[in-house]
Length: 254
Image (cartoon, rainbow, N blue to C red; front, side, top):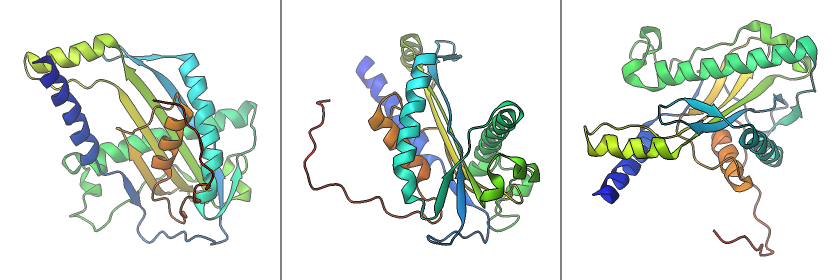
């Protein structure tokens, strides 16, 4: 009985992940490969921890630091696929660092709003419903984004946000018991990732890939590679990943 309940929980998680629409772009926006445009890449915002039995997020500094290193390494390796000139945002301090943090937080908030009020049809705001206006995707971070460090040297900013809360043992037990008892689907774990292109002149969000059920354990290099691949999937102008080397590579047993 317990095995059946666990299997049911896992199947529900798969359905939720697949049912979610993830990618959208502003109507008329195009960014072909080799367009001559420059993309300013900011360091990913990363937060990793555990989900308590009661559903609270409990940050883990060691997990977060390891995930940050893994994600930044994976991003550096894969950003060649963006198909246009890519530059890293300069190191910022003081007021500039605060401004970057504020816009990174704003990007995350706007991305979650897109998920809540546009990607899910039942929650769509009247002004965002597709039957009111074809292909509506009209979101902005504001024109003040042009003041970000490095913005004057680029056309678009690429923001990435990542939050993982791994279900604690207590949370997983609660999930099974809730399904066995009242038949309630209790979610265990949170794996959210958002990647977006923002026009640095207007502040408009021109492309977004957002998902609250992402794959890959970012605490490992392999998982971080998978996560970055998912985040950059479908980004305008992207090119195919380079072919793997012919030389066999020995991997650790799983």
